[in-house]
Length: 134
Figure 1 (spheres, rainbow, N blue to C red):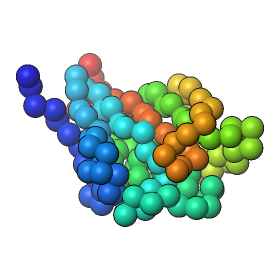
Figure 2 (cartoon, rainbow, N blue to C red):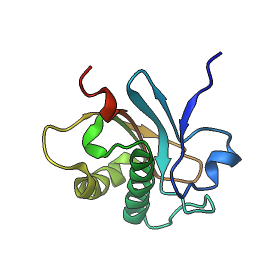
Figure 3 (cartoon, one colour):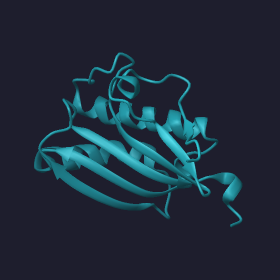
Figure 4 (cartoon, rainbow, N blue to C red):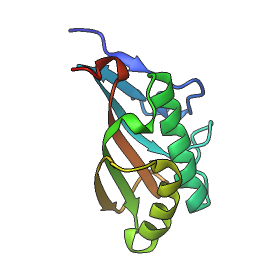
């Protein structure tokens, strides 16, 4: 088996080690990023919903940066939300702060009942810059 090419942000939070998963894996010119939540460094959730979404994006952007990417390299997004009837419009207002300009990535938004104490999670696939010509 080939070793996984793991990408870890400069300031990882405690959940990666606690729950035994990699922040992101590089494979075949793509970056597969694990779902990012609004976790503080110690792994605890940011209690304010809007700030939790912002922190999830800061955590995501830290991983993208560590891989030499930015959100503009993201091609596919999956968002999970607890109670989307209440949270979707608020989340999407915050998302606009990080999303950038069109063309936008593809998106799948999923309502869930549980995110381990969090209310918002974002998972992405990005094209690595060194693979841009392929």
